[in-house]
Image (cartoon, rainbow, N blue to C red; front, side, top):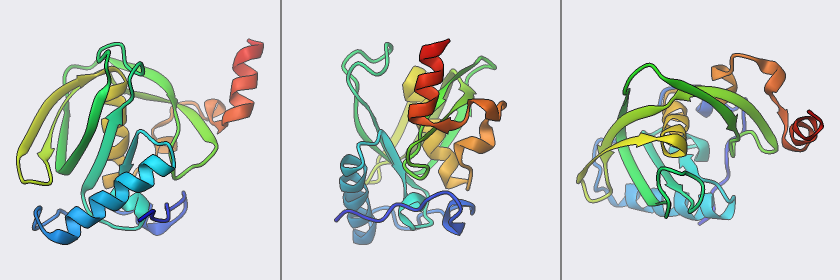
Length: 174
């Protein structure tokens, strides 16, 4: 079932999400299935449970083929429940991000270049990976949702925040 996506300003996007107590509960599997359908319908690369009005520490993401030079064939859909992330070093890079909760908007966000993350899959198995490039960016973006943070709060320069089409016009004129 396609779920309604919360937009910036909704209280569910401003609060820290709760830990999932029973990872293998049927309602968590249903939530994830609905999140996948919702993300695919919205043509997103990731989605966090708070974005669909469920304040739990659940996120999904994938890296589309050709989106990340570090992962030539992309990365299939990953479900992370109760995730944790840590930066691997101090290197950061700035890139434009968008968000299903801020439709039509984009802005430049500074993120750690390399991270390590861990969390549980739907079957309760521990997933641990290192990530860089777009992979690291999408994980950090979705993880922020679990802590009540939207990407504009991470921006250093709000002059790079605006509507996608306007920002593209500005970039093309430079």
